[in-house]
Image: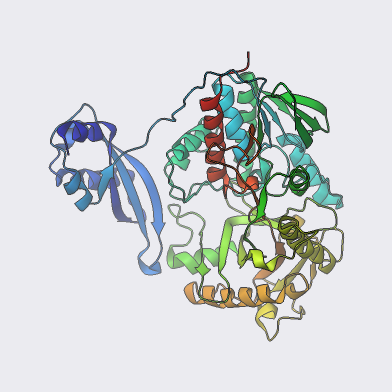
Length: 553
């Protein structure tokens, strides 16, 4: 490797990985260990600046829980004598994060871009378009953050669901009522832009440090509002209670978009509707757009006492401020179907996430402090596209019908009024699990304030093959985390919105197949899973539009 490349790497920085220290070790001691490790690479440390880069918890051995850090070393000036091979041998790598690249097209867009959906994908797409002077129109069928919170709280009290503004629909998307997890397994430089933007909008400083960053629903609401305000300040237009019901391309190349707030004109349409916009999928099918059914997962929420879960995972170290609330991710693929935990919310609550009348859907949510009594997570079972039955000749509608059948069964099992059916793990694992006689004891349901639940077997809600996989998973997870399947733990049904059941097909230009100028985007379009990956997909789509067009004149 050439010396100039070596110098450039050191100028940008080197990541020193795998610094394992006992819980309670000070930041200064961590940086000293990184400095000592760097010295052994032969680079004079006097020319370097060290700072913490990433932090994670290694709790594989409860008797010896460790904190594992990565440290970023950057040069105060370019420095020669850098050996890539030696650094790799010593557990180091070049710091390769780069600024977001934006190319600009030359053909003026015929009208302003329209972004449909204010979840992470739509937000970040509109934000980048606004920064680049495209003045996007951003719409959502639901309410603003503040109005949406009031709508959800009203539903919790009186059981009257607003199908247009709820935990699924509105400013920020489903993530607004979640733990605000930012963990992603995609390897994309845009992730840094997402985290830095969220931090600039008020997210905690440590989201760029933690290996499993989270914002918390209480903080995330303010972040979402600041981002929407920024889009408006840059010339964008934000419109609430505005559902897209159809669109047509005019002869001049612009689009006429039918909405519940009247007709809108735009140059391109970004479809970022979220994974629960079933009527939008149906409308797209009626327009002969190409959609396909995709695999999903369904299951239940499990609740433990937070203090029990902390002890299960951290032992005598439970409660140490360096560790925070205990988190887990468990999976087993050896059975008939894959089963795994998903969207774990330490110190949180199970939320009522229905978006259609006479259905019950559960999800999880935590505040930044993660200090509520229970911890919860989804236990989800893999569903194949072969499990869907075609509806009116459509596998896509069959995928949606599969979810809907489960959600309606949960509503009936809960006795109506959007109460949730619950069953103790003890009853679920006892014999066939078709009885629910032991009510909650040490662990009380948190759904809708803990006052709206009914004892009912999980088997009244979920198919038998899903129940069998859940039993297999519970026993498997109990072997990995002793006490996980404790009889007092609570199961709430049904978790059905783990991801979109369909994908809106798009080409390499990010446009919908056969429909130029329409850009499917994010989790609801089938191209992401979680806040960060959805935001990254929104940025990709914005970059594609920027590369193809100049702002409308």
